[in-house]
Length: 173
Image (cartoon, rainbow, N blue to C red; front, top):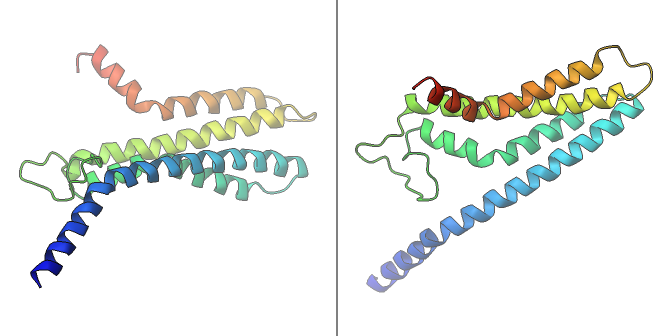
């Protein structure tokens, strides 16, 4: 019975040793798949707009793509929110030790940034749709400016974490 236990322990140790490599593969696959979904969503949106159909399917594809691209950030924020480790998944530390800095209160802003980035990508997506609409004859006036406003707001939301950090350093925070 002792040989079976040591074999099972060795097998589990090998699986634990291989998890970081698997995690890297999984996040890379999610990012690439997300980029493909975003690209196909943009393509479908333009095609649906040309035909005058609803773009809900294209918007859904784009949202799934954004979610997959941001998969690592969602998981990172979720592990911080429930108190596991510090949210650093490269160590695969799933037990909250004493003195863990990943308290639920400190991770709420992190998850809020992920949500704001998600809406930033949606605003940028909307900007491209508005610019595409403005190229057609008979588009309402101001479509280009609305698209530009969406694009600038989207870029701001995508980079809000860096922007707030920069503003904090300028203000001495």
